Amino acid sequence: MHPVKQETFDVKALTNTDPKGFLREVDSFKETEFGLYMARGANHPNFGYLESWLLPDLGLRVNVFHYREGIDREDLYIDVADIREVDGKWTTRDLYVDLVWREGGAVAVQDIDELAAATSAGLISAEEAERAIETTLNAVEGIIRHGDDPMAWLRSVGVDLKWAESVELIDPS
Image (cartoon, rainbow, N blue to C red):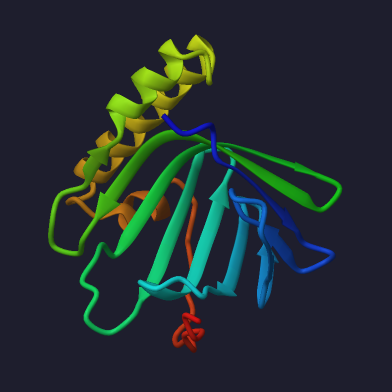
């Protein structure tokens, strides 16, 4: 069982401290009334660029991983998380549950078992686990009611996410 993943997004410094403590340079942040957008390169072997929207009112971090050629993965990866902003520094505390979606398919809920194990191990509180379950149910219900389209559901609640039209993948080395 891994500890709770936490990240920091420093808008002023244009940096993202990832869950392993690595400081990453950010290409751009954009703050809106509903959240924070981040775009940055990634030297990961499977993907070379990451775009994320932090949506504190919904308790979600919506991600687009730009995968390398030959890697066939999801279109959206959504983390259930506690999200806070104080003086231009945003933080996320991942609550273990993930929603994975491929265009034309149904949303899949992953890692409920990790949520249960983390709660049992005292890594997150019962209140956090309950919030994670409520957030998951709310998102899944909304997505299903909008034709299995997370973006349509988000637009229906006033969250219109914009993504880069093109990105340059970072070298994995």
